[in-house]
Length: 257
Image 1 (cartoon, rainbow, N blue to C red):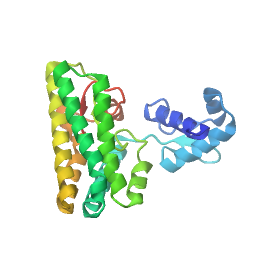
Image 2 (cartoon, rainbow, N blue to C red):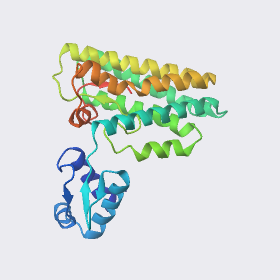
Image 3 (cartoon, rainbow, N blue to C red):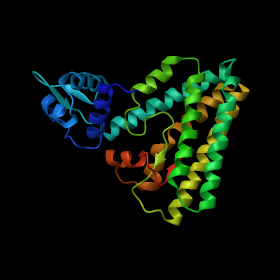
Image 4 (cartoon, rainbow, N blue to C red):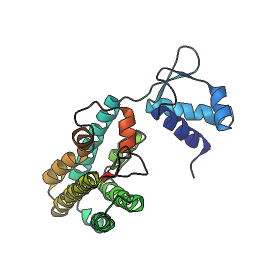
């Protein structure tokens, strides 16, 4: 069960990322206590946690100032995660016990393929099916982090997982456009490509090919932002709101990542 201070931190973090507070705005402990109906102790613990994450910073004197993440912050974090997951894939391909994790990864791939078939049968985006795809994606990526044999890789990924698009196994979700036939087909294409990349990564790890596993994972890990820039924004400037929409939990379009 999540502690009260972690829960409060999650709420404040979400408000900051969604733009409820302006960057540079001072956070009032008293107001936060009133808003969240808690005492000062969990609020103070929550603020210290958020300071460690870089979401807020200490102001002059007492109190904290909002330090809202920028698109550049998130893109840099995506790049870091890509390198970490690539390292994890390489390490896992070198481990003699890697075969212990392969059945779970194979089942996740098959679940993702099954989700695509369900969407084709339905003929439209379906939230419950997309949640199945997301769950399978999370299992696949989580298995690589768990099986790489280096706990600090997963730990470091966890430190940036609070940002949009940075949770392990994140997928590109788009809630900002209508569910048109063209958009549906585009989503299926991206899902198929993601699954195909999973298959290559799986086979490289299975065969003990660390170079291939690392290279494909690096390519795979950078596709999220590329999809948004190429297919969705058509060269326009990204905003944090775009990234939040593309990584929302109730998607209407999806691409495997």
